[in-house]
Amino acid sequence: MSRLVTAFGELSVRIDGSVPADLGGPKPRLLLAVLVSQANNVLPVDGLIDALWGGRPPRTARKNLQGYVSRLRRVLGDRLHHSPGGYLLRLEASECDLLRFEELSGIGRRRHRDGDPEGACDALAEALEVWRGRPLIEFGDVPYLTSAVDRLQEMFLTALEEWAELESDRERHTLVVERLQEHVVGHPLRERLAAAWIRALAATGRQSEAAAHFDTVRQALVRELGVTPGPALTALHRRLLEQPADQRQPGPGNQLPRHLPDFVGRADDVQRALAYLRARRDGGVMVVSGPVGVGKSAFAVHVAHLLADSFPDGLIMAELGNRPLGSVLRALLDCVGLPGTQNVAQALARWRSWVAGRRILLVLDDAVGQQTVLALLPGSGASCTLVTSRYRLSGLEAVARVELAPFEEAEATELLGSIIGFGRVMTDRTAARRIVHRCEGLPLAVRIAAAKLESLRHVRLADYADRLWEAPSLLDEMAVGELVLRERYEAFWRDLPQQQRVAYRRLASLTPPFRYDQVIAEVEELHECNLLMPPAGEVSAHMAAYGMSGFAHEFGRRITGGTAVGLPPVPGS
Image 1 (cartoon, rainbow, N blue to C red):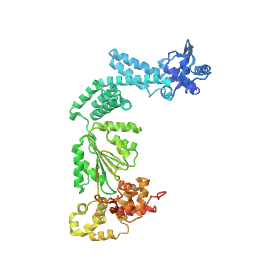
Image 2: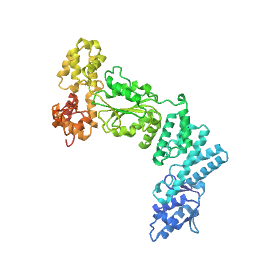
Image 3: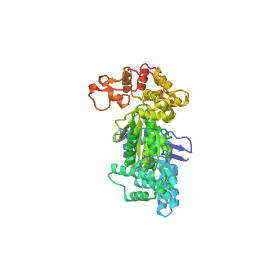
Image 4: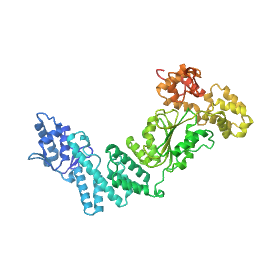
C-alpha cells in the first residue's frame, strides 16, 4: 500500500492516490509535521511532548502522545514505530515531497562538484519544481519547527542560487529572470542571489534594472547589517557600469499625451521648472498646484515635452485621482514592460527597483493626497517627478513648487486669439477683453469660450460677450463637447475631505471678497485646496480680503442645498 506525505501547502497523507486521509485534530497533525520535519530520525518522547505543548504539558501528556501516535499509525502503518528513546517515521524520498526536494538538491550539488554542470542543473531544476513555497506553513507559529523549516528554506535558496549560476553559464538568462523574479524582492540581503539576478537582467538587456537592484541590495545591507556589498557583487556592478551605453536596453520612450500646439503664457514658470528639473541629479520633485481649470496638466505636459532630451530613459505620465495605489502601480509596471503582481508591497518594490537605475521624468497628474505620491516617488537615482494637484500638498517636504494662477488679460487674450484667430480678436479687442474677463482668465474657461466661438464663426465677439455677461448661470455656459467646467468642480467636490466641504459650503453662502474674521476658522483649509485666494503680499490681518473664483462660488451655492447633479448634501453641515 503506497502512501504519499505532502508537506507543501496543507499537510496531508494519501493512500494509494486516494483522497487525503483523516489525520484527526490539531495535535495529531502537529505531531505528524514534527515527525516529517525529522523523518528517518528518532525523536525523543520528551522532545515530542515539548513540541506539542510548547513546554507546558499536561500531566497526561505521555498518555495523550501515545493516543496521537496510535491515530497516525492507522494512516501511516508500520512506517511510524517506537524505537529505543522515542519514535521514528521512516519515509522514502518517493513517499514525501519534502524528502524528494532534499534528495534532488543533494544530487544537484554532488553532480556540480563532480564536474557535471548539465546534470547538476537538471537535478536542481527538478528540485525547484518540487518546492511550492515554505513547507509546513500551517505550523509557522510552532517554535519547535522553526529551525527545521529555516534549514529547508536555506537549502531551497542555495539550490536556487546554484541553479541560476549554472543556467547563466549556459546562456539561458531569460529562464533565470523568470524563475528569480518572485524571490529577489523578499531576500535583499542574499548577495549571491542578487548577483545571479543582476547578471541575468544585464544579459537580457535590462541594465538599468540591474543597476537599480544593486542599489536596493546595497541600501538593505547597510541598513540591516551595517556592511557594504562584497567584492563579487561590487565587481559585477562595476562591469555593468562600464558596459557601453548603446548596449543597454532603451527606456519606455515618451509616453506623454499630445502637446497642446496652442499653449501660451507661463513663461517665467516654465523656465523655472525647466531649470530645476534639468539640474537635479538626485531625484528632484516639483509640485504644480492651482485651482480647478487653471491648466496644471497642460503646463506639466508642456514642460515635460521640453525636457525630453534631459531624460533619456523616458517620460511617463500616470493619472492618480482617487485611484488605489495598486491600480496605479499595475499601470506603471505595464507601461514599462514589467510583470505586475497583486501584492502592492511587491509591486512597489519592483517599481522602485526599476526606476532607481534610470533617469526618467515621471508626471503624476491630479494627485488628491500626498500618500500615493510619496509611495511612487523614486527612492534613489537621477529620475525626477512632476506632480500636479488641485491641492497645495503642503505636507510634501523638500520639493520645488509652482503655483499657477489664472491668466492676466494679455495671456488670456493670446490664448483666445490662438484658437479663434488673432485677426478676429483684433477686429473687436474690447469684446475680446470682456470675454476673457468674464472667464476670469481661467485657461479652461477661455478654451471653452474659444471653442464655442470657433464653431459659431457667424457670431460677433460683442454679441457673445453680452451673452456671457447676461447669462443667469455662467457655470452652465462653460461647456462645449467634452470640456465641461462644472464636471471638473463635481470631481473636485467628490474628492474634497469632509472638513473642507463644510468650510466651502459655509463661505459659499456669503459674498466675496471675505473679511479675515469671516474666514479665520477655515483660511488654511480652503487655501490648501486652492478655493480661497489670499491677498497679494503681506498685510495686517484685519485689512486682509480673501477672494474666491466666481465659478467656485456659484458651484458652492449649488451644493449648499444638494442641488448639483449627482451630489447629495453633506451630512452634519
